[in-house]
Length: 146
Image 1 (cartoon, rainbow, N blue to C red):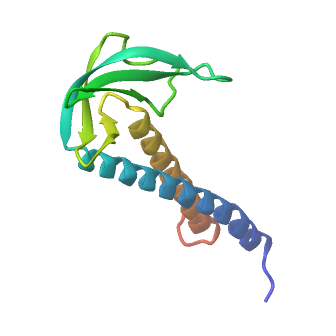
Image 2: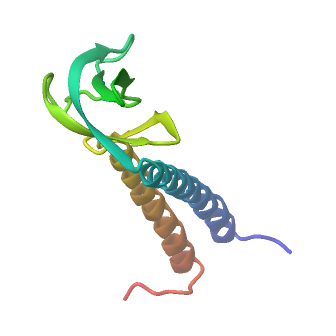
């Protein structure tokens, strides 16, 4: 069995786009599921405040530092996401959700980095998979552009 140029092109092009797309989709969906799981575990809440911006070496982004107290115990939380333009200001109040079984497990709804990250990955993954399938369908003659 010999492959034609079109068949080889479909395998290489669509295969590459398909694998990239599936990778992006899986990463986005797993990250989204992890974030949702954390959100679901963090059932207690307290009021916190943005106390500082922390710069990150080698990056123009800043990470937010939050201060709050749980059962009278003062705590600080450093956002895992660096942002170029933070959507919160120092002194701004936020609702801090935490896991009552593990008070170090914190979720702050105002941090949109995780949601944006997972959405971008899912959208890119879907586009790449669509391009792979569409290209394969057109080049293999399954679908016609007319």
